[in-house]
Image (cartoon, rainbow, N blue to C red; front, side, top):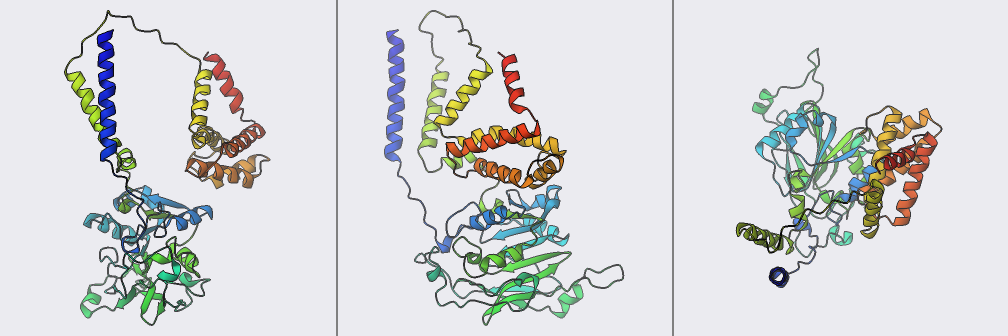
Length: 444
């Protein structure tokens, strides 16, 4: 027993030394401040250079939006057929490969709508159409002294810009406010050779369906800010200043309305490219979460220590003992334990997810729809088949999904949401609680 105690104490001392050494060697990094010179235009980013405000506004306003976390090659698959508008904002940390750019152009040519919001034009993403081309002219570059959260500093000596002509992209817009770093788009006309190579899209009678010439919608004396043109059967929309849709600038003048016009209809699916912002589905979430902390180094050292112990083939320091009898506890005790753990960790979102997921599945079955159907459609169908208020049900479903997706929520708010879910179950006669209780009793 004394020898075993010595080994245990030795392990504790080694682990303690590892923790102390990693803690001493770790230098905490201050939260990186947003800079316009190295802007993060991801829809996950809530800083002034991010675009989370636009994404969340679209989602709350009933637009069909998703964060696209796969390569653009998937746009040509079955899942890509549901996407109507594909949006790329700013210079992405992960560059487009030739194959990805080719896949994107193929998707546009089949009828897709591509929206590029950037001060720099990538030739692969803004190809020529019928010989017509676009180029970007820069009038200034930000530095580290520029604060993107200060709209007065970002728009210093800038005059609001009015639409060049009444179009669908300038509908309900009086004026927009770009930043002082906005580039200007220049339309480059085709040469005779490029016109000879142009193969226009025509109807059954051979009449061209649409001109490939770019259309300027917003411009000032320096050049165009918003241009669109046809490419194959699709459209390419180019806005030359991402600040106008970023968290720090979307609130200025009619910038929000301009973004809504550029993105298209709320009834069609809008996909924001997050794959090239480093949010691809292949990313290691565990390593990314603990990046920059001593946890990864400590885990590696502990793993090395465990492997060393296994390799030395440890001896037994006492007589063999029979295996302990596993205490078979009832499912009700398990539920109580899980509830206590969730309460202690304040994981109210997890508690709501456990209940809401099953309720949504039953509601979808009651409505005769698929589980992944939009919540508005599920609520409307349930309302048609019962006396339930469809708007109230949809609001409750949205609140539950927001809580599951990370919206702040207290235990009292979580309790209210659960009670409302149970009330709908009771009103619809779904009987989920009674069935759960009956199954729990049978498993004892």
